[in-house]
Image 1 (cartoon, one colour):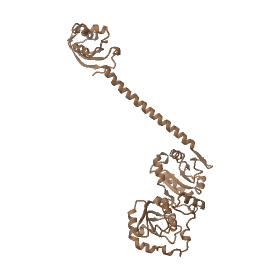
Image 2: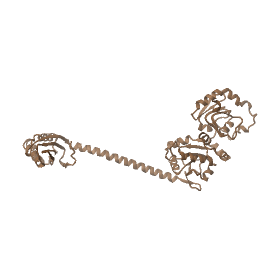
Image 3: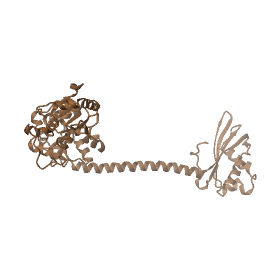
Image 4: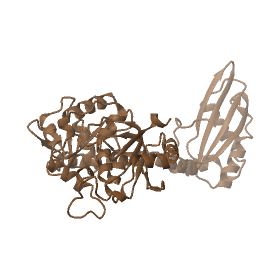
Length: 436
């Protein structure tokens, strides 16, 4: 069907549109075509369907003709709008095919279509409505998201405060909280604020500010850095100049400022003790000054991870107790290794690459299995003498050794041995290379 958008049709008189194709064996023009239509249909259909009378009464609209000539022949399209009913319009259209001459030339007229203009208009209305509705929906959604984000951003930005004489970007709870999270930049602080985390401080580069170094000795500190080379450099400096307790990293290649709330929560939940992290990833160990917490910090950290059923007064450390105390409850390292050696070796092999730890009782039975990152807290929560040995896919650190001594754990079996400054006499150490 030809494209009729450029032909003017009177919408007030149009219910149907008759489209016919004209072919003439000679050169004809528009007046010749119109004259042939009126002349050769006159009296053919009776007075009720006389074309001239129908046009005068407005029941037939203006006849539109497009005709062109080429190589001595003419072709064209004729459009006749009708407000008659379907049957009358069909009869009128059929009568046009009786025309056999236009002007002096032989001609052929064929009805190509009888179109219900209202259906066509309705289809156009539907399609256009869809376009407008989709555009409106996208615009409303975009504007709504922009508005929500703008309000959220404004609120979080207003919550942003500044810490120390360097005026470092920080969350509103950074000063008062017992634990803080150190991030790289201002955008990281804002992103964590969006997730409801308000105890953050940004170091703003690799030159760690003095105020961050000082506050790190007073609070439980988690370093949360990007998963790229820049994050690694900042982390290396942090562990050397500040007192870092835990380390969390964004996924490889990602930045903290672009993480979703779910990703942030997962990264912080998977944080690792700093000593363990440094040994596993080959970072330089902190100085002796930074390894030793002052007594107030130790007390605060222990309160942060209380033992189950812990009494008001702390149990004396094992290395301070008299060697003769309760000798019947002691298990010699040599005997333990001899009795459960194969069992412990098999456990270590099965844990390879899992980053998990297994707690074993004196009979060689498994008490619990926990992620290595939770080993320190889990050992603190264990009742004294319930665990006889610990096997884990990780590195033996000074902190784990101290807790093992306090809990009277006879043997630690692990992948590697970290930097140890003092080894308790009552704890045996067994690493992978010794049992391979």
